[in-house]
Length: 234
Image (cartoon, rainbow, N blue to C red; front, side, top):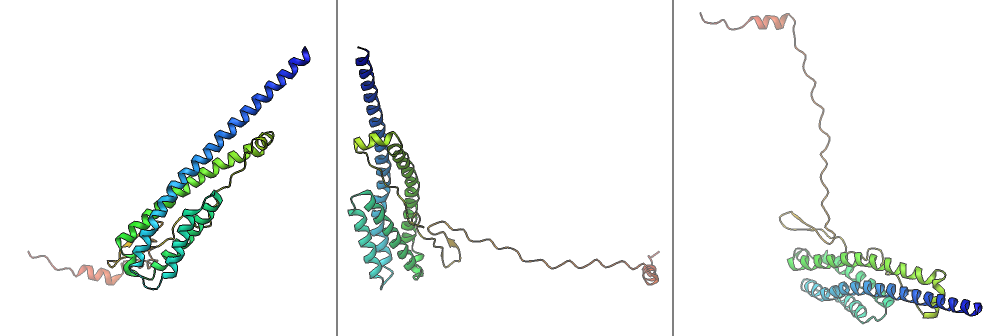
């Protein structure tokens, strides 16, 4: 009888452990999926901005068809990517091609002063900033989930339930922001580009040393001059 009770207690504990670990893994996996879904919303917004940006640049350029083709191919690859790993690689490629597009814009002063181009560039930068923030949140969630399924004894239950590790969203260097471009209009004022660069303040040069004060002459000549005052009229 005592042996049967021990067996039942062990079975109950195992069931509790199985249910506890399983539910914990499911909750964390859902958090990872939700964090990635938030990133995808911003990625889709970027995909929508790219064609308008390309068309604006195309209206001012004549010999940049190769750059436009690369951007179109990168955008299509990012849209058609199915897995998270494929999407991350495709999005990094798209970011690199967009940097080349802004580099092209540097050769066209009229384009750099175009209000529509500046507005689209600012919208793209705002989107990149949101992606950067959400990528950090996603990576934190993935790290917590991966630790849970890889640490003992969670790794045993994760293997039984077929929970697999997720990939961190590691962006290429400089991929989280559009390139820094500073536009100067005809009036000489500076318009901030992708990263809102601020012109450097001018440092005043060294001031010439002040001339030393001339000493007052109290000699005889000075006294003689002071004595030759105009007499007052009586």
